[in-house]
Length: 277
Image 1 (cartoon, rainbow, N blue to C red):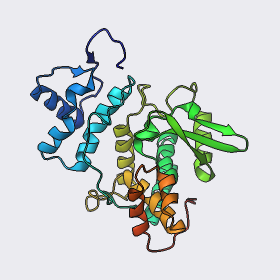
Image 2: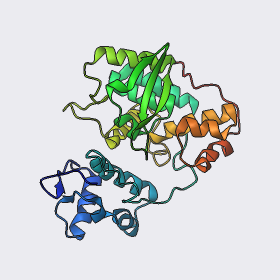
Image 3: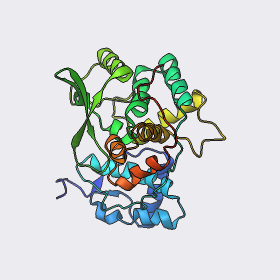
Image 4: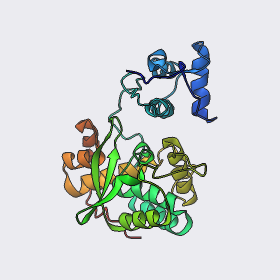
């Protein structure tokens, strides 16, 4: 059931990014001059993008802010606005160990505490930008002798996953919360305008940091992205355990076949994930 409203449109909060411009082009072609409250009206957006020649990775990126817009009012659109079928291969390369260490050293010395924590969440836990965006301050808490992070995972309708926070990531988390103020229901990461950081904004922030740290450049930019840090975590777990279910549990894959990609690429031993910077 759709939430009650006084009109049939959603407020346009998508901004002026290229993703917003593409979506508005689609709306205009459909004779829609407002974002409809009922997502059924735009259910063919993914197919429209495919017909326009966008690649699967671009389609996924273009659908993300639209889905988040509906999710903000309690509507899950993943089964309505469908994207491309999952390709069972890496769309990005893992980041080499020496480059991850270089990145973590860079954020420790040059970045704000907020941006440092975001990068470390990707490097230590392999989190997606959408999972980081959805975090509230109260999702990090102490339980007995452990520190726990509660997650709202991709494709799920609530915060149904917990991960233990340890080592260097724990130290950064505690420092960040001690130096910032807010209530448990406040977003964990906010912009200067005190709004929740969107997934695409988080990805943009991390991408720029990777460029500044020298691990993303013109030669590898088509294969290295913030999501590459997630692949790095999966690759390390696969090399350590050779266990597809350990990879699936760490990265929260819905389909174990996705986890199998990491096992097939695990051809040498590796020590970590306790990055020492």
